[in-house]
Length: 212
Image (cartoon, rainbow, N blue to C red; front, top):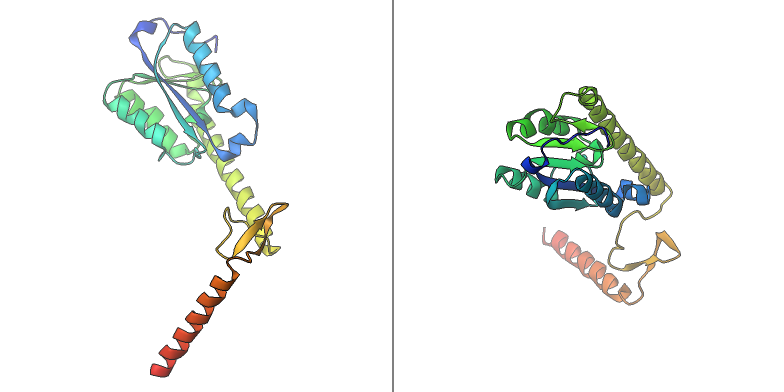
């Protein structure tokens, strides 16, 4: 961070972009919203930068750019409210190689937006060797996201093969076992309703077949 030089801080209207996905959250405090905010704020204070706003996408994957806060950030770029974006690292901006490349190589330059990634040392406002390897970092971030996705799918498929429940909410007629989140038990209160639904469905099916 110390190697990032801002010679004309008064020229910039800064947006702090913070993102945390469910996968990142499992890593603990190092990737937390508060940790990212603290790091970005300290940097801006040290460089005397004026922060216009914080844009926070909490619990959203970096493999998509359809994020509420990011879309608001883009809208503010279009309205000329900001001309500098700072993130903790490049993966916070996005983990999709093509999408990230579009913003870094085309959209930000066309809109005269300077992008800074603190931990990567990326600064599009200057010529730097760190900027030269940005595409490779984007590819690695993309590969990491796909690897995590495949691992999650593999774990879910394995649980399904074992007959375990992997949904977030129990279907009507069942309840989640508090001691075993992947197991269901019958909801006795809803049981009569479920029986009635099946009974009426079977009766209707018989009537329909008899009509033919």
